[in-house]
Every structure is written in C-alpha cells, then in structure tokens.
Image (cartoon, rainbow, N blue to C red; front, side, top):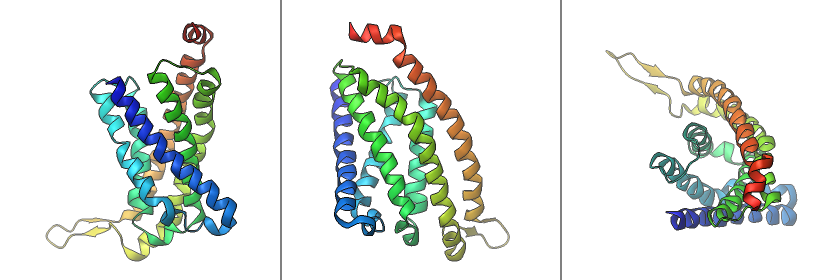
Amino acid sequence: MNTYLFVYDLMQFCGHSWIFTNMIIRFMSFGKDSLADTFYSIGLVMRLCQMLSVLEILHILIGIDKSRFFPRFLQITERIIVLFVVINSQEEVQGKYIVCVLFFLWNLLDVVRYTYNMLARTGIYYLPLTWLNFSLCILLYPLSVLAKAFAIYVSLPYFETFGTYSIKLPLPFAFSIYFPYVLKTYLLVLFIGMCFITQNLFSERKAHLGTGNIKKKRS
C-alpha cells in the first residue's frame, strides 16, 4: 500500500509540475496574452489530475491514508464543482484571467504537497519542506477560495443567459431548479467550509511542526 501511495503521489506530482512549469514558461514567453488561453492549454491535464484526486477520498475510507476525511472531501469536491460544473461548462468563463489565477494557486499548493507526501512515504521529513507544506496552505487556501468564489461570480451572468443546468419540469410536477440560485447558495457553503478547513490546517501544522514531533522525526 505504501508503494501504491508513493506511485499515486508521483503521478500527481508529475501532472501538477507539468502544469505549473507550463504556466510559468508561457507567461515568461507571451506575457499577459498567455493568461486568456490557460484553460485551453492545460485544461485537459488539470481535469485528469482533479479526477484522479477523487481516489484520495477512497484512500481515506479504506484506511490506507490517515488524513481526516471531511476536510479532504471538502477540498476535493470544491475543485471538482468549480472546474467541471462552472468553468468547463461555460466557454466564456474559460478565457477569464481568474482561471489562470485559480490554476496557479492549486498547482503551487499541490506541487509542494505531493513532494512532501512522496518523501514522507519513504520516511524522509525535510524540515524546511515540512514547514512550507503546512504553512503555505494556510496562506494560499483562503486565497484559492476567494478565487473560486470570483470564478463562480463571473459565471453567473452566463448561467442566467444560457440556462445551463436550470431545470423546469412541466405540469403536473411544476418543479424548477434555477441554477444561478444554486451557485449563490454554494458560495455561502464555500466560505463556511473555508473556516472549517482553515482551522483544520492550523491543527495539522501544530501537530507536524511541534517541537517534540520535529525531534522525533529528526531522530
């Protein structure tokens, strides 16, 4: 199981490293012009990596990963909803600069996280990397939530115009779902989840960077 988890982390590291490097090189080569077509350039690999991340929920459920289930479940479902339901379904949103910002934050976090996980599978705990892994997420995760919320906000006019995912059943059911209202409600859920996950991140940082725990890992 440890070998399997190492291979999984390695695959995710390679995927997110490719995306992150691609974004940096494109920006250095084309400047602001590269931001508008970020989704078209790396969207496929990004979607594959996020679909693969669903396995992490299964890893926790079957007990081979000791991470807490609910915070990880929230983080993964947030990305799935924003990427597949919001961005992927609205071509007009895909060219917005916020997509580039969102992808940059996600991949920066994941490159560090999967690097830390791979080393941890082999029993290596490099203190600066441990500190970076559990400190960077506290700073960048709330920023990523704000980016997700803004991506949802800019998508609302398009969902209203095109009626994507809105459902209106004929009589005798007389039942309808107006999807922009669903997204507005989800914004509230997103920020409530941010408070819960941020608290969990602080707890994890304290657990992994405590003096006693650091000495134990060094020994």
